[in-house]
Length: 376
Image (cartoon, rainbow, N blue to C red):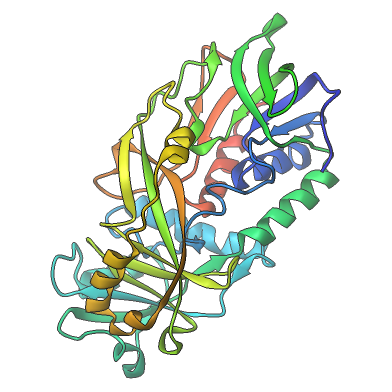
């Protein structure tokens, strides 16, 4: 990684070295011609937080029957993601979506019709695949097209491309303040874990901190969009032979997903009821990462497995390995329909400052489309 220790004048400062921050930095350098770009990341490495600690799913729309826009955008974006990051995409597994007989918000027929409406591939699963489910609780099972991604491969891509583009990177460094600078510029205060605070002058700031969007002092006004923070647990399991090579989602209600997790060679297990441990309304000066650090992280995997096993009995032979605990940030306005639109806000109080949040990895294309319309 290159460093920016002697660089106090920049065209753009990007705060957050996750997938979105890295992709936006590469875009600004390659597509928009910005020459001096600084990327600031609080962790020791890139893509070490939400980009890593998640379900590793590249969505194709199936997950969102109550939000047509989110579903359709996922269906449109998936082939682009597969094209642009082929080394990180894994499609060597069979993906099944099953519909529960009770408490589901969508029936099998409705789900099938919805998939046809968004143009997503779907077909009835063969009997051998249906047989792994408890028929008294599962109405229908479908074979679909969906992928997982390897975040370690995405991190390697980010390091390589950022180096090629000449993007300066500061890791183990926090941006603490965004303020108005001289002559229409912006000023960003950055604080390394070891060393004095620096002030960086720039034309543009891209706030890509995910859960830390509102944790800045200075003139930063906060996002106009209300956010909710969750502490979420993603269990990592070693699945039994019967479930090897499968990704399974039972929906749409208080149900679960089991997805390959290529970074660790395991599967993630998430449950709508047990994955969220606690939540709160995002406010300034309540640092979500500090709350996570102080949280005791007692796993709920036993409760997950107990409920999942009612629908998928073979899961009782899985071996629990570990849990990923991370902050999950969602837009309050989309809690009812489970939609995952991007947050893309310009701050009139700080011309040139953008706050950007994506709920899914394939949302990056929605962000880049927004940036295409901006004049730099």
